Amino acid sequence: MAEPTPESPAAPRAGVRLGVDVGEARVGLAASDPDALVATPVMTLRRDHNRGSDLKMLLKIIRERKVSAIYVGLPLSLSGAETLSTQKARDYAQQLVQLLKEAEIAAGVYLVDERLSTVSAAEKMRASGVTSRDQRDRIDQAAAVEILTHAMDLRQAWGREPGAAVSAD
Image (cartoon, rainbow, N blue to C red; front, top):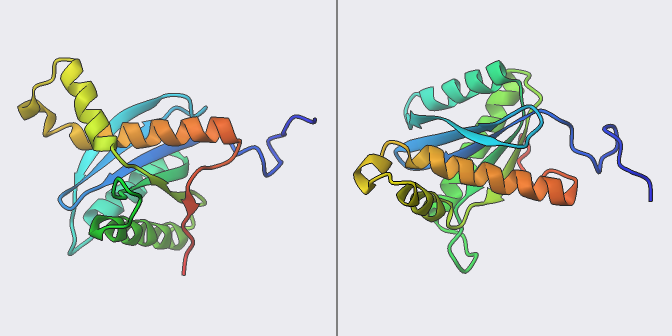
């Protein structure tokens, strides 16, 4: 069997990946290295439902880091059912796709299952000695790292971008 080439659809293009944990009050961000091997926390943005300053800052980060794929966490219930938070994440991803299109930035946006990402992030932080009180400022970034790491693992295993691609309407 032939090895996939960078030009073939089976081999996703190289580049920085961004993990996004969308919450009601905050948005956690994590980024990969250009080879999409390691996820590191970037920052937490305060949600701005009225003016969208969080989305504008996210767009700036995407441009500066030359991000090629964005994985937005899709918070499903443990049974896999959609919740109110699921729809909010879908809406956020759709707004991001529209901004990327308007800014003529060619980065794909993918919704990836993020069940238990915050729980896993909190457990890892607690295991490393971070108290619950101190977690508050970093938990969104840590959840974004979990989302991004999971997506990159799937990408490596499958040879394609994981999740459901979000397209401009």
